Length: 133
Image 1 (cartoon, rainbow, N blue to C red):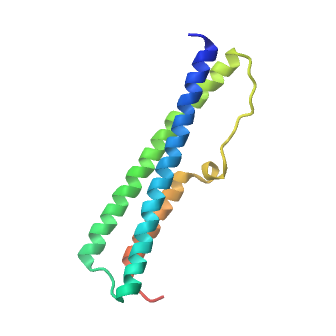
Image 2: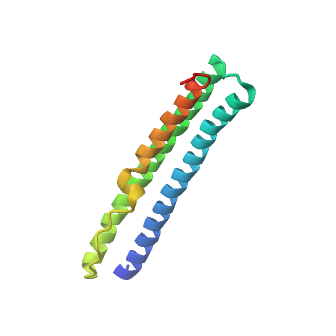
């Protein structure tokens, strides 16, 4: 295969993986923020907190969602890292010199960690509902 064609294919796959990571990130954060806001709104509307069984079930669901989506995001990132290295190798063959991008602020902070932090925040909102601070 021609290196230029191979580069186009690898670049397309890398772009797909980046878009996939972004989709995972926005999808899970929307759900986690909805849970957090929903628990807070429910408490405000009814002046009651969730029962123990409800808190356990909701916390379990949030924990599974947060851990699974973090692992899924990390797997996509790992595949993207391999593709980026392959792209760099092809660029070297084609004598293309591009700056080595490190990603934007979300990548530098780590969307993986933001997902975990929002998972913790959602669980805290579940368990702290009804607690007056």
